Length: 301
Image (cartoon, rainbow, N blue to C red; front, side):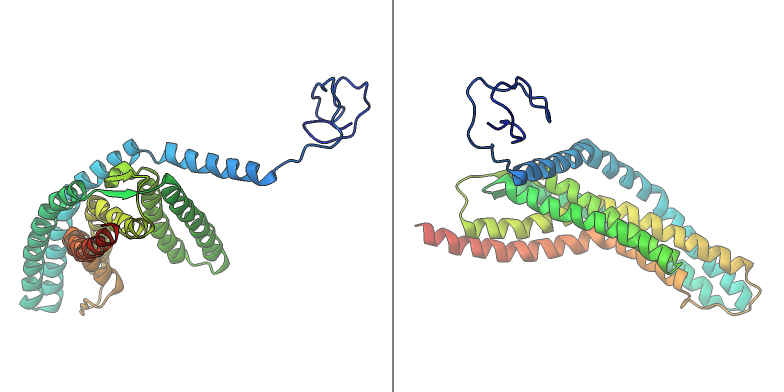
């Protein structure tokens, strides 16, 4: 006879399996029980997904969202003042009033960009609430979440490997930025209520296909506040570093082509205008999706 748990051959009078310790049944089994290893593999993957869902919970996202919004209140004026200060220092070192005017123009630009972005944060939130998405099964979201988890782990591994292999710390910074973005996407996919997504078992295959596309766009819209505050803060830090270079440099020349200057300016403007840009993309894609839904509904009638 064979043990019902591990399949080890045991004597008919054996009480406990010598390998796994399971108490043997009085009725012997003529064949070992087939162990489904893939069931155990699936169970392990489910545990990993649930672990990420527990860590990257709704409260996790809401706390980070609130933190990003608070950061924007400090980072935006800091970026404006730093840009103006860089312009003034550059004007003094180069005897060029034009540099001072550019600094003033930067302050006005930042103020306008913040106004636009801040207004569209509310627009983005309302658009998510007013445009609910449905999928036929939560398996879609779990699989998408698993793919992003795999991408997250790969990004972290590749970033560490590349930075050590090539002794290039900038690679690690870039990979860390990608990893942070992937973390938020995993959070939203595993908590679909954050992006107004529900389960509807009567969805057709075509509706599911449209839903998967919209979920990714809705996740990008939901990240508007985090991008608004996060990128603006990082851009302000780049400008702070560039301001240090300007005041500590003994050169009489000033170039806006410096990488840290361009990075700081670009990140601040991109972060502040991200809500506007992602909303325009969202409504354009949603228009196409609505047309596709209308075609699919005709097929049902």
